[in-house]
Length: 290
Image 1 (tube, rainbow, N blue to C red):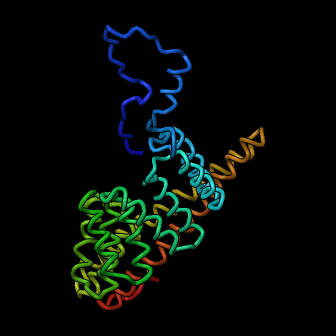
Image 2: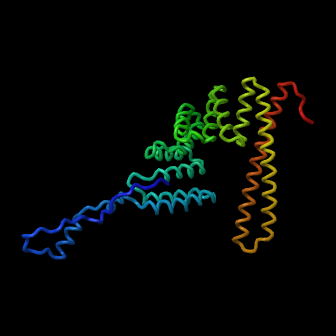
């Protein structure tokens, strides 16, 4: 959450000292009537908002998304907007986009990311997420615009470079795609997806040696990921047997579920990498491994 703009306290009214010459004193009722007639900022319409309340409600809503409850999260974000400034809150809109994406309501997610960008045009994460949705809708040129805008603000995010490379690959520009995939790998050498994409791009360019190198590294990393998640799962299963309270058991069960899902993802990356690597080796005339 960005730092809120500090406004002067509207209740701290600078009252000049009374000048001599008046012989009539105002009554308490007169003073209260005058104060009630003053329109104080932050009272009607809540234009100043309550940023602390917004942040607290957002944290609760984010936890609901993590728990797989996007509808409840959206209700909480709506509550947060009641305490936001008059024009809304970019972070709330951004997170609403995530919630709608989780529900599969892509058009609504797009609309929320756009609302966030109207308030904060250099919101790098909103540009990146919006670019991904537009890419999936095959609105490639607009997706490229948002990925480039994100990179301009946050040039060292490997994910955005990989996403931009993917769009160029979808448009058939493999040379540009390879440049962005290589940049993603240089920023994060352990980025398995980017290495696989770079290997695939090299293969399309006919650079088979380079493709085999990148894909071989990606396969090794995916194997390491599978081994790590297997160990993580085994440790969590052992911890479940020792958990004494329902709360502890629920925490461990969440860890087991997370390890299982991560293990499946690592296995999928391994299978994709091996498929690409075998394709390269076939093109090079190398017999497949037994």
